[in-house]
Length: 106
Length: 117
Image 1 (tube, rainbow over the protein chains, first blue to last red):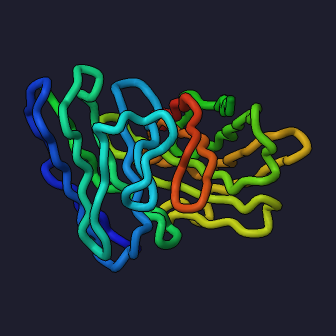
Image 2 (tube, each protein chain N blue to C red; image 1 turned 180 degrees about the vertical axis):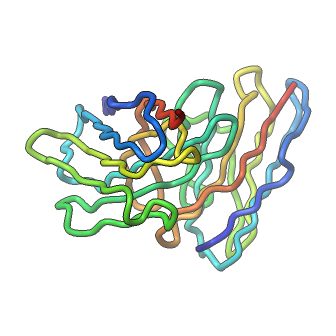
Image 3 (cartoon, each protein chain N blue to C red; image 1 turned 180 degrees about the horizontal axis):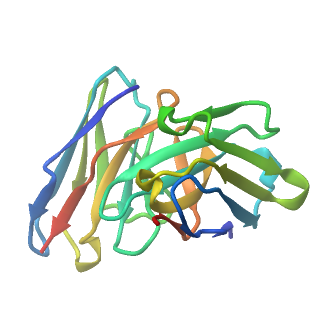
């Protein structure tokens, strides 16, 4: 199985900050990498797929980059509604696997 | 708008069985791969199983192979997860999810399964 490692596991930030979360895969994913946001008690929400394609309706302050084994999610200017946990997920092959999550806290 | 509504969760003793259901609406259900993803309390997301549009291909995470069975009824727009020989580490919120190429673009609200005596 492909292992996904996210860092950091948590980050403290303020409104307006630029935040970057990284995700490393144990194998080459090409660009088969997605990012999700999850708020407490809620289902995850798709933010980005194919490494850098923004899902419809997602604000442009979210962006993704990378290729191969190293990827990142950047929030350019953190908003109050962005405080949540973020997960990367590889879609190169079954079983799809997730990173352990990064909690973005105030 | 796509809606996925899970049901069937609850409290079950170790070794017991449970069948989860997911009712889909707002989509042509038979066109999509579907999946179950779970989340243990306070933990991250973990994929459980996938099923092809016509049910001809199924994939499972190793920890549930031989115990869980994913199935679907396209005429009823429904996805199922039959869970047998349940263990304490199966305790989680179980999400029904719609797959597209390289992504999960729709999630249900989840149903909680608690395995405890």
